[in-house]
Image 1 (cartoon, rainbow, N blue to C red):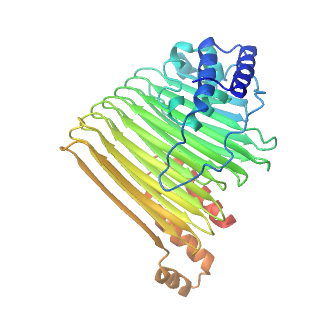
Image 2 (tube, one colour; image 1 turned 90 degrees about the vertical axis):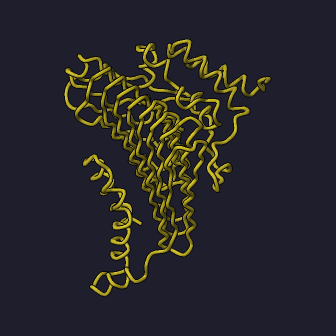
Image 3 (cartoon, rainbow, N blue to C red; image 1 turned 120 degrees about the vertical axis):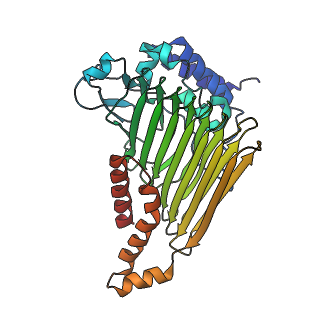
Length: 423
């Protein structure tokens, strides 16, 4: 396909800036190819949800910040980035000695190309949709975490990304986690914003879980009302490996996204747990998908959402068992609670099964708050807002209690309580 002049000019600008930053040739080539892909790529499909009128593709200024000195060797594993500036990257000396790598994504592309290049934008490909191609072309923040074979990181790797909404610059933040065979790691991400300028966040998370590894990825997304967010988070799971997701969608602005798990190797497993709370005029559309490729693979999805105000929330739970995935299991539960009459919620279970010897099931419900529950609580002396908060806590407790990481449970519970009190 012929590149239009605007695309040619953008490509020249991106290439020149990337060269100035001394990015490797292979990454520059990926950026240029992604800009071409963007001119004809389709939109990420979220059933029963239309977001095409959102302004998600503003062109960044490309004024990316340089990373500071090498990561500290003290404290627990931790990474903090505000906008495009890395503020902290700490890694204990004993983990560094074992070959663990924790640094920002652009530094990793230069210094660890043999580890980064085979995986960067290979789990989520730029050609898949316009959000992915835009992300690869303008990637300007994020981290790379590598855990070598047989290495187990006991403490969670805590990660914080802050969208600097004082400038309104778009943030394309990328997380690449590579867990080599029989390794183990837990990553806890907190995605926030500071400032009141309208801005966007486009996040891609790629998890490569090689044979026998275990990865737990938790994220509490808490972006402000002026931020429009999109995300694509996906794991490629090898033989007898496991990847678990725990996602708390507490953004106050419009959000669209997809969390995928590809169970590639035989015996691969995954649990995906999602909580969402929407309010005011907010619109949120989410796909949570597990694809069973290997034999005797197991994928579970558990989603619960609460709607307030005039908001909209769409949950699509997708279980896809491909031909040849004999002995696979796919279970999902999607439930939505509407607290106010002006809300709109959909919980859509989707099962795509192309194999006979499988076990698959789903449950879905969308309903309003039980007035008898509210009446009972209010008859005990509670005012209506307090009674509603208790009902919501009880509704979400099924997901919260199923999250194994105590620190994630506590952080998510605190965030939920804060959002409910501020609503």
